[in-house]
Amino acid sequence: MQSIYFDNNASTPLAPEVREGMAPYLAEWFGNPASSHRFGEAARRGLDLAREQVAGLLGCHPGRIVLNSGGTEGNNTAILSAVWANPDKKHIISSQVEHGSVLAPLEFLATQGYEVELLGVDENGALDPDTLKSAIRPDTALVTLMGANNETGVIWPIGEIADICRERGVLFHCDAIQLAGKAIFSAEALGVDYLTIAGHKLHGPKGAGALYVRRTAPFTPLIMGSGQENGRRSGTENVPGLVGLGAACGLAMGMDEAVHQRLAAQRDSLEAGIIAAIPEVRINGTASPRLVNTTNVSFRHAASAGLIQDLDAGGIAVSAHAACESGDVDPSHVLRAMRVPEPFLHGTLRISLSRYNTEAEVAALLALLPQAVARSRQGFSL
Image (cartoon, rainbow, N blue to C red; front, side, top):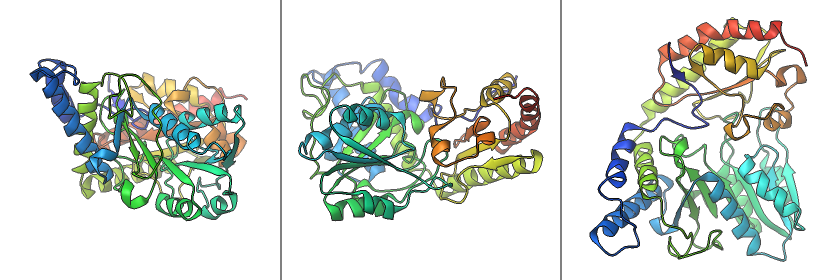
């Protein structure tokens, strides 16, 4: 049976170059980076190189990088650092379409006396910067907004948002987990105070990520102990994983425009094929700038769970929305915020490509999808 993977916004396959870079740290160079012998020194050198590679991708000084366990830790650390630094400011701004690793700490802070304001988006998932301007108040401690949506791929104007926050004297955190490796940007040039990435979204390993912290931004360690990461993140470092993160960032830096163009062409071909073959369908977010690898498609009077199972039986992996919420039977909070009509909400698929997907794999999906939708519609009921 064929085995085709189209769920790359959930996790990407480990790149061969990354696996090769990690291998020595899983075998001969297994030492603790805090040790003074040659095993420890080798591990330290691996971490130093990883930090430089992450900084290279993010366009910043290596000293601005805090290596950690991934996106959830990075998002929580940035949010809490910002609000703890401004105890007299109790207003936080975010959006209705954020990932759970941002919304959950905000929900917690709401129980601690903070007022959390979630900005809406339009029907194409776009956020109006003027809405942010109007929302910022003298007591706003933090603005936390994503760079690109994990479900729809819609990209927001992070540089403009950072300018607004800087002009108003408000700290700004950007969850760039979906953006890193798919778009070229510089954290320093954007002007963000905090920015989060995760290795497994860009062909690196799970359990490895990084947080960019601007030189002038306040920072409080979330994890305390023996003071690793220059006192910013305690705990013995996951050397193989972080070396893999660095290698993945180096690989992403080398991805040329031809790869982006090929991904965009595959995505456009996929969407055109779906529209031509299946009636009563909508592609969500098409009027906004989007990641070149992401299609979010809704089928009227169909069920996401059945579609996913049907395609999986045919050897093709797709998802409905965020993998962290895949057990949730309710329609996506992102699509609800975009006011997708109710008849389409329950039949949504997220199809996310990677540099390793081929035109033949796209064609294979297009061959199976019409029948899967037809079967789902036959048995559909709310």
